Image (cartoon, rainbow, N blue to C red; front, side):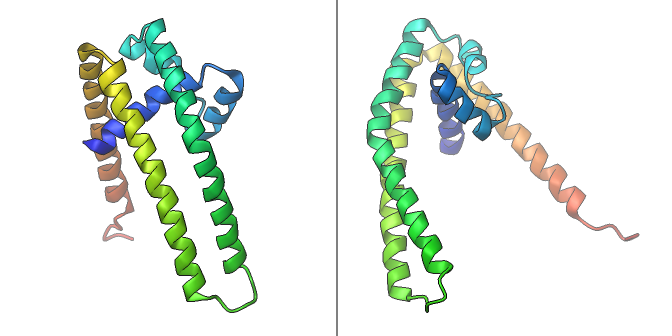
Length: 161
């Protein structure tokens, strides 16, 4: 349930992000043209201009926290790449240290995301919008379950093969 809430609230945050052309371009690469983000989700939930403005402000505020963390994570990923692609012996201690640093950054990112999602859900959305969001989440969960069921049944070899 929390994962569905996270997905849906992330989609709402994406709706705000898609308001600028530069951000919309980034979202296209991440979410197939913003199929679930942007104006479609805002319209589905019936977000007002005031709510969209609140979301944009929240996203801007979150970016000041998240951007340096993302930059640090990218630096750690580059260090990991250098370690694994080096011809030098791989130091287990150095690798463990780097993994711990990455885990700390990931934890901070998770907390920031959860705080933003809580704020959106509890401070921005109305009860009716929360109900629509819950309905959307149920539909998405059903689609995922159907997809998984179809994927697993298609991957199973038959006796004729």
